[in-house]
Amino acid sequence: MKKTVAMMMALFMCLSAAGAQALTVTGLETETVSRSWETSLFFSRMQALTGVEVQARGVTDEKEYQALLAGMAQGDIPADVLFKANLTRQQERELLDNGALIDLAPLIEENMPNLSALLAAHPDWMETIALGDGRIASLPLINETERQVCVWINRAWLEKLGLGMPATVDELTGALAAMEEGDPNGNGKHDEAAADLTGVFEMRWLLPYFGIVADDYNLARDEEGSLVFAPELPAYREFIALLRDWTQRGILPGTAFTNVHSTMTLSSDDDETVTSGLLVTMTPYTHVPAAAVTDYEPLLMAGPDGTIRWRDLLGAVWTGCFAVTSACDDPAAALRWVDALYAEEGALLGYAGVEGEDYVVDENGCWTFVTDALRGVNDIRSDVLMYTGAAMPGIYPGAFISSVDSEIDRHVFACNERVRAVSERVTPAYGLDEDAQAQADELNVTLGALVDKGIARFATGELELTDENYEAWLGELRAAGSETLLALFQAAQ
Image 1: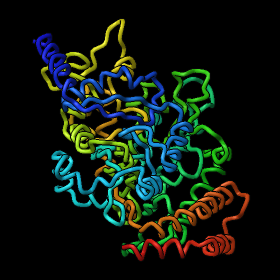
Image 2: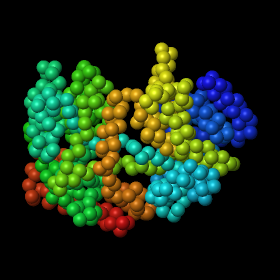
Image 3: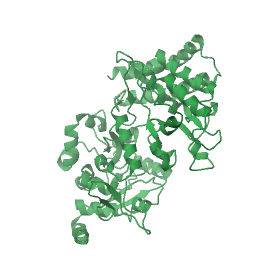
Image 4: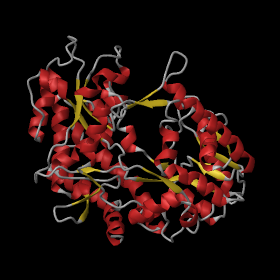
């Protein structure tokens, strides 16, 4: 049966290729495995599914790709379509304004039934992908089950030390102190990093324990739901005081503000030794040995009001993934082709491949990749799949992916669902108009650096955390434009 299906697919590919209009496709390929778009089975399978022929070439050097986009602004159009386009909002506007890209807004309803149905069911998604004037430069990745950055704590260490899951900041401090002073990894060395955090970005994920959910602009909402500049909240000083306390106790090393890597494991002489008590990441996969991933749990402690709140870092809609250039003679065909990725059948071609060839599903509905001595998972990722690296357009088939036949993966997916259930956005994506967004971004460059520097100075003891010094720091932030930044977002509500 599988051989028959394969033969039918091959026949359909040949027939469809004869009448299909060839589209030239380019985009950014940042995957670490070797992947050639010219030979990838993904594009030939998409041709079989849609009847649209594609000639694809990925650009593997990011500087080269950015130069390609800059050349488009000067009229040098390299292809009909940008796939895994990796466009910023500013690039979208510029390339639309100078005619390098075409406006997709008038074409979606007629040519993209799958995406149209999704946008009709979620009008807020349309607001996210459209520019302020209603034009649409690019199509998105839609991922309703995207992993969220959170704080992970080593549950196995807690159990070894006879401790329960911390429910308060004081209990967390006590648990981390026990990890630092004891030998929970059992190797007889004092190599544990209780709070294995590096840089203020990671440390700011502790803010929800103080009732503060802050975004990248350092904006948050107070108890009444009003938008505020987060360092102005009294609880923000309590957060800094905690970092100071942890630094003094040795829970958080002073080098945490200057180190490059965020985990001791990355530089450990023994790749199987777990040295991290507390991590901030989307998944422990990238920080600890595979065997230790299930030892970690999200630490979702309630804030002072008893509510568990977390920050939604990425949202469900990632823009900038697919665009049609002014060189394309058949935009409708381009949109029909990509619309297949907004349904599960097409999405699975990019995320799992073809059932029976690249993956199999067992009687319990769990799936796994088909591998042998000649072809491993990385070979499948290289030759078949497209989802890794720069974001591809379409939907993320979350229900399918989460049914993978892997205890480790199922653990991570289940943890992620717990985090997503309490996550929220502080400000809507692309809520500002073009001029206000540009002003906000410029202010944030200065303010973000001042916030990080101030936190580090207080936490390391370089600057004493007194009323006078804290108010002087807030004054410095106000002088740099914190109130102006806040006003921009308040006006857009």
